[in-house]
Length: 324
Length: 126
Image 1 (cartoon, each protein chain N blue to C red):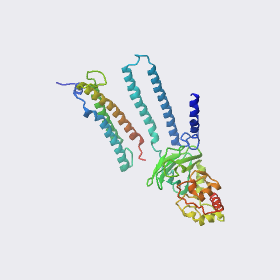
Image 2 (tube, chains in turn orange, cyan):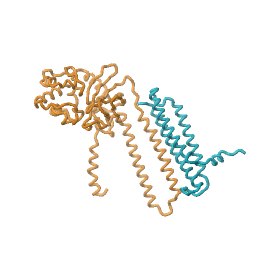
Image 3 (cartoon, each protein chain N blue to C red):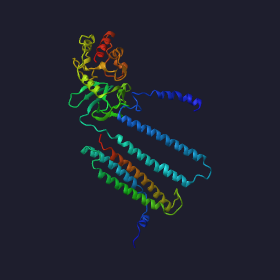
Image 4 (cartoon, rainbow over the protein chains, first blue to last red):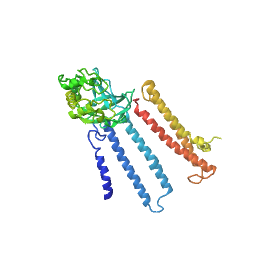
């Protein structure tokens, strides 16, 4: 590559590096489907490069061929083989090879089901283990490694799309419809998913954490998640939370807050991020979100509480963070 | 007097009407496949409920496409000048249509196979 060309291309190449990460990438799979998708991607890219180089070599050979060397019959034979028969066979083989990956994985009624509902601009999550009551949570998806999980995808307002690049392909979430995505995480770790269908002002701020855990740890976590919150009732933030009507939209199980318009906050403090995967869980960030959610997420339905003093929002934030 | 099948095929004359036979079969098979999957999923909850019937339908479409391709191929062998057959004569017109029909038959054959493979391999309504 010549120097000026490299100089102009280098920033673009370095910008591409920003896409390299282990927690939100199709090329860093932690689930079965995503591993299939990566295999196909690599083979198709490799194959495309080989075909491109082959065609380029043919063009060079044709341009450099001595006069009289190329014949009409030879050209027609080349078109028949390189333009007809070989592509048909290659595409047919690719079709047969890739189609089984499109077939949904089998699931049984004994598998854990998780209902995920896309909302503007957060995720309603309900774990439905067989023969046990559902466990409601939000903005975080936990998965047991090695077990099949059936995700039941829906939407509360507009069309969203559920996409955890390292886990599986994306699937739309459509109001009034339940789409099933059968997944299996194969590697424990902390990953990230996003909304992949434009859904409003804060579409790009609608993400979530995915935590793949060893099965025993998952079972223990789910049992803990099913328990009501253990808030410090004497905390000043608890009284402010109630007095300002936060419980009208947000549920904190074990308290008077039972609303279901906004995300369930029962174990809010145990999550790593807030505002649907957007901000790290710090007291300052929680207080900022409580004071003016719209400044973090334009278009969010949560009203601003600017009339609260900074001390009050800090107190509410500390209370919410204590909900482990 | 009994005549061979090759002779009869050469006596058939391809026209614009026979030219559209292979793509029409492709379209019919395509529609059939989609309706088949949709009706199977809706009525019985399975994708491609009766694979043997579907295979027979696909086989029939392929046989008819191959037959029209072979007839067209026989017509392309009518003596005359080489391609591109663009003269304003009956023979050139015949050979042009025959050649086009043959290529369309090849395309339709591949298309029918590519339509049938997903029906056979997916097997799920989700």
